[in-house]
Image (cartoon, rainbow, N blue to C red):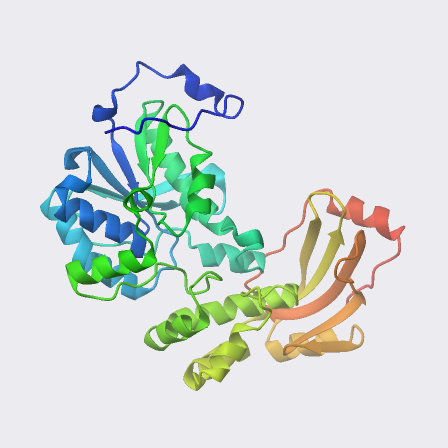
Amino acid sequence: MPPTTRPAPHIGRHRATLRLRAFLPWSQRKVVFNYGLGWDSTAILLRWLFEPESRDFELSQLIVITAQVGEEFEQSKHLVETYIYPLLAFLHIRTVQIARRSASDRDGIVVLSDTRHPTTCHVAGAHRLGDMLMADGTAPQYAHGRHFCAQRFKGWPIGQWLSQEFGRTPYRSIIGYNADELRRAAKAADYADIQRAHEFPLIAWGWGRIEVESYIRQVVGVEWEKSCCGFCPFAGGRADLVRRYRQEPAQALRALRMEHLSLSLNPRFGLFASGVPLRTTVEAAGLTTILARFDAELAFTPWALYHVRRIYREVAPLVDRSVVTLATGARAAMLTHLATLGEVEVEGGINRVYLRHHTPGLRPSLEEFFVAAPTTIADKEKKCFTAMWRARTSGVRQILLTF
């Protein structure tokens, strides 16, 4: 049955949705289920399939959609392909997997699979979230608990697919927030409108994480894994990450690589809000083989010398950054070149030569330094950055870099 009340539309933000075609009865609407591969959404699917009375729609109305970010653990892929996809295929439930085509929104999305007989969980995606972050020399943003990368690699692609699939036709949107996540559900409900009404089955059932895990264990007889990237700052605890790194060392190497690049460009921005580097955690866990492989990678990968500048403002955007590659070559050569530019400061095993230090919390202010790091990082700055920088430095000449 449809809910008796639904959130009122935000007229200003969703004005276009008021021009809908003929109203589609609730009983005829498609049901779009955002399947994130993890505990909560898996529990919903299992209950719908094994307890038909728990849902108010026919399975022919259901569309199970997953946005693949390209960074899932292989164990999540195994679980989904072993326990979920066979059920969806047996019941002929439409299953869609999509991904971003590139870092640019202009390139749109890729449909990895759209079938009623799913067999393969395409966790590799198309354009990987980690590749974009490492090209930017940064890590996932987690300010105030918000998942900025999830919006860009999950929310946005799903929104694009829904727009292509439904146009302005109303549908039901199912989200897997559990009863312990009422605040997250309230924020999501704010974006409901005439075309879509968000529903939260786990909250309606009163199921929190304990009930979710217990139900999955009862139905399929296994301990389900959290769906997350190997470098996710919301991964559910470092002990759990270390356990999974033991099983999948490639994920640990990728996370260490990302944090090293991020810390190279910003010593204050590692993977975790605590400020304790991932490398410290890996060392404490005794994962010496993984660290040896990572150190070997750093030694033999191509390196570059970067010029990094930041403008810290008092108003948004609070920070503007410029990254320019000055030279490339072997690691030893880049570190030697760096040492010719001034006094080397070492922090967290990363060498820099500062021209301007930034005092945390001080705005407006500037930061400028040279650093050597792997060549993964791409040059990037706004077109207006040079003019803004000159205006703030009063035309002070920069050091001329030559071998």
